[in-house]
Amino acid sequence: MTRAQLAKMLVVTMGWGLIKPPFERFSDVPADSWMFPYVETVAARGAMSGFMDGSFEPNLPVTRRDAVVAVTFSAGKLITARHLLFRYAACQPLGCHLRNYFTR
Image (cartoon, rainbow, N blue to C red; front, side):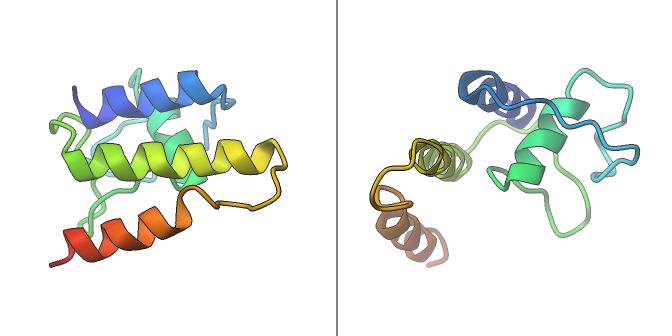
C-alpha cells in the first residue's frame, strides 16, 4: 500500500469531506491527480504529513510508523467527535510512546 492509498483509505473510512485548496501543498502531488483531495484532506486534518523538502512521496510504501500514527490520530479524532469523556484518551499516551520509540 502506498502513502496516497493510505490517505484515501483514511478519508473514506473516517467519512471526512474532501478538501480541495486552490494551491498544491506538496510539490509531488499535482492538483489534477486523483490523490490530490485525499492527500490534502489528511494533511489538513493532521493525520499525515509530508517531508522537509516539501514533498509527500505519495508512491512510497506505507511504513509501520506512517500507519500507526495515521490510524491512532484518526481514532483520536473519532473519539473526540463522539464527545467521550476524555478527549484523546486512547491515543495520547500511545502517541507519546510512539514518538519516543521512532525517534531513537
